[in-house]
Amino acid sequence: MIPGFKTALEAWLAKAQAIVDKGHESYPNLTRPVLKLDPGRRYIRVVREDDSRSVHCFIDTTNGDVLKAEGWKKPAKHARGNIFTDVVGVTQYGGTYLK
Image 1 (cartoon, one colour):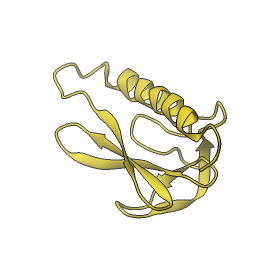
Image 2 (image 1 turned 120 degrees about the vertical axis):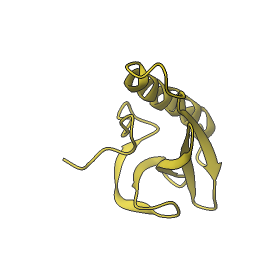
Image 3 (image 1 turned 30 degrees about the vertical axis):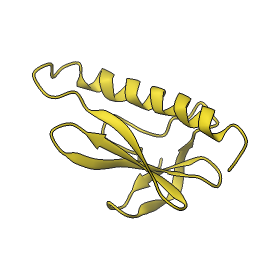
Image 4 (image 1 turned 90 degrees about the vertical axis):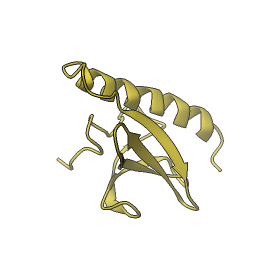
């Protein structure tokens, strides 16, 4: 694993959770979504849990890239951000679109 990966991942998760929380402020009667990590062999699946579970995005453990989800088990191509930079790469709903 890359040196500093765990620390960078924890900091990134806090930023991503803050984005989700800010987007949820307008809906106080709904269950607050919580982002949780589900590690795999190469990718860490970031799961959004509220009344249900859905994949929020994926993190590539080889380089820290944030990837939009193509489905529950597979990330889409092309990085949307990186946990080692200031580009978070997610919105309150999941990975950002490419520009």
